[in-house]
Length: 140
Figure 1 (cartoon, one colour):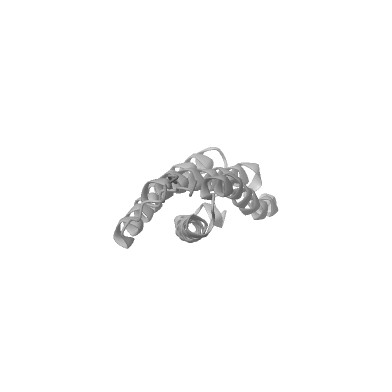
Figure 2 (cartoon, helix red, strand yellow):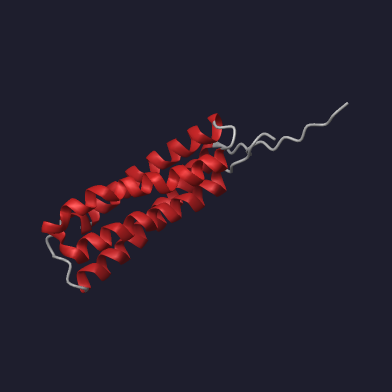
């Protein structure tokens, strides 16, 4: 008789997942606020809408929720979610940066650089949160 070792993802309650994503939202929003303040201090235009709290807080929430849904789908459906996410996350983040480059006329280099940093900060915080509340595993 052969033994098969399986490592399955831990199942967390929806409340734990929601709490983890909410904490990630709070941390990412604070990080984005700091980036926006620094960008304004470094000459980003004062009227550059994406660096205003209503804009970046909304987009942070949207990005974190979309990421959590995607992470959950990959986690459930993929035979090797770790490997897939190692490729998927950087690809999605890179694609999310593209629209920012079309804002140079309004946000100048400083404003656009701040937006790029915001994307990266949210991605780093999100991945750490998802790993904690939606751990990955693979069947071997």
